[in-house]
Image (cartoon, rainbow, N blue to C red):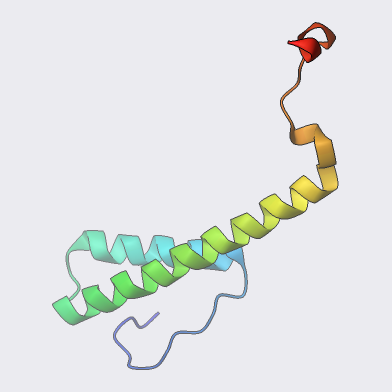
Length: 83
């Protein structure tokens, strides 16, 4: 992956691809071997990937809530219903 190109990076094909790219960026940044401009580009790309992953997780959470319906509400004993 080339973090210092001027092109707009492509959208990840999947959540898993985004997580793998994010892990690679973190490893590169933690190594301390990236030049300043590449570090800034890696940070910007990482921010985009985090937003993408958060959005994907929100979508999945919404789908699970729809599929599960009322089952995601806290359980209550029959005796607590009147309190």
